[in-house]
Length: 163
Length: 67
Image (cartoon, rainbow over all chains, first blue to last red; front, side, top):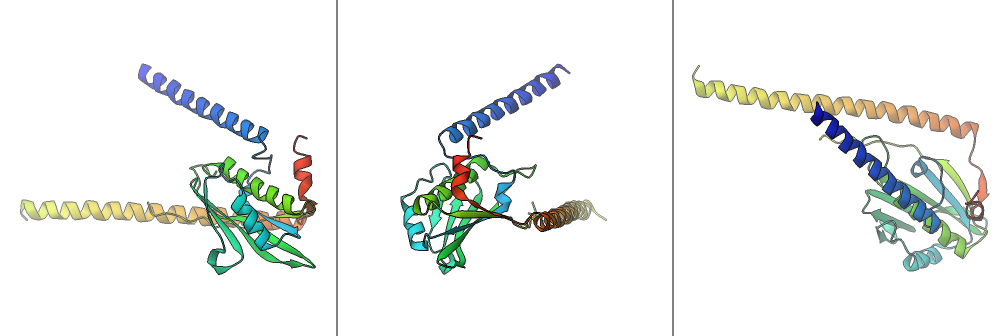
């Protein structure tokens, strides 16, 4: 019985420490402007940006950008399209693609095509996803401060692994 | 039936049993995930019909970040 209580205290202690560390990390990243407050489950939304920025301008700005908080490998012209794919070490992918034109402006779509989740359905590192979206938004704002955004919900399809 | 045959039958039985458990487990999880996705996607479609996406200035997200 004593062993049970010791284990319980250890588990609860670890959970509290992990929670505090995560909270401090979030607070510090927000204070540094690396992330902003977003809707819950924002990784299931697609952001449609209407901007004067061109794909070439975006590509060049991404090359100069800082994505260290997201730990990503970047693939330009992904699938032979005007799209940039970000593959993160935190088990998610993000993609920004030229989605269409609206008058003399371009519409870019930013979304997460895939992410792995923990047991309770949340991605492994939400802050890294938030930082990614924040970096892209800041890049678009630096090119065109009048950029507008529209958020739409994306349908999800869960992959089930055999093991 | 000698001991060797009995052992082989036993091993085959255990292997088949494990395979069946894994298969059942996989299909149960597959069904549960499909059902959950269907419910969530239907709710999203309904929410989108009630509240269609609106355009906002991207800059507002950053000027209002401390609110």
